[in-house]
Image 1 (tube, rainbow, N blue to C red):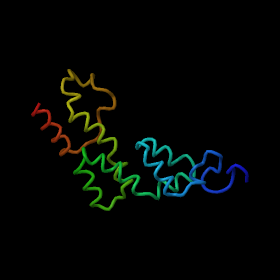
Image 2 (cartoon, rainbow, N blue to C red):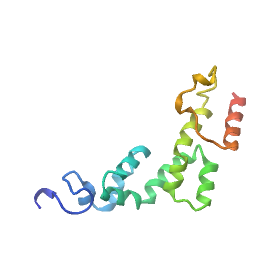
Image 3 (cartoon, helix red, strand yellow):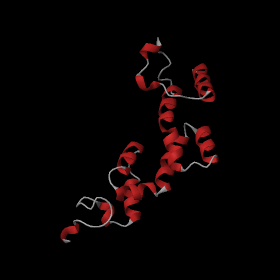
Image 4 (cartoon, one colour):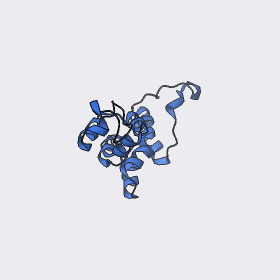
Length: 138
């Protein structure tokens, strides 16, 4: 078809770069997305889903960033055989909340009613121990 329309790959529309570019180039484009955008792109169409889901390097990159905050958790999940994607999805929001607590964002909160809604996340005793140690060092 003229102008690269229709046929092939994902959505097949004129803006479907995955259908017309080599997989390496598509993967490079997706590698510039943040975690939330990458997850949204993965459900955009079948072609995009296939490229994103099959590329462990996309997930590994983000997972290693999360590891800076959640090293114990990431290492444990990887040790149990979880893929980079599943490991990231299991730890992403936890790392965001944990980072805020560790940075002291909630050090001077007068009561639990003053905490923002997203300041809590189910965390194990070891994680709370890390947060408490950080608070005691402040």
